[in-house]
Length: 167
Ligand SMILES: Cc1cc2nc3c(=O)[nH]c(=O)nc-3n(C[C@H](O)[C@H](O)[C@H](O)COP(=O)(O)O)c2cc1C
Image (cartoon, rainbow, N blue to C red):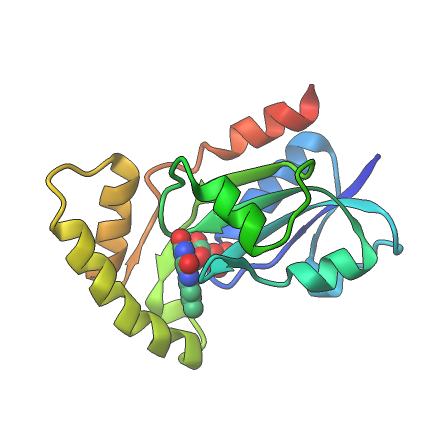
């Protein structure tokens, strides 16, 4: 039985997704580092990726059992995203992974992360501008990279996660 939804969030996307999930599934929602859930319980973990690594994953798996992971990034998920996430984060084959696009906000990041991403978004903008056709998700990422902030193409991907845990 799932006890809670835990999240890590820097600029609000993971918190938003975690709250929508918790509300729909009637589960309490906690920031991962302030989690009052007793050790050993099953949780869904919602977190953002930093160079493909799920931020805060190891501190959650140390004490909790994962019922699933919602992986949030500024890039839209592609066909290889789930497998890459499983490999990079050493997630077992039977742990469900859902890959969603979140927002990006350079100004909302702590200084060290802002400095990393100030450089990185120039590469992203160059790479995406060179493509002939962009999906709505890629267009959203390009806007994020050009403007230093932006919203995902859709916030609705969380509905699939809700449907999965409701069945
Ligand atoms: C230092 C840093 C590294 C990031 N690395 C990635 C990445 O590898 N892939 C990706 O899609 N997004 C990456 N992002 C973007 C965030 O995952 C994205 O903005 C996410 O929506 C943030 O979630 P939040 O709004 O809950 O903080 C990175 C952001 C930062 C600040």
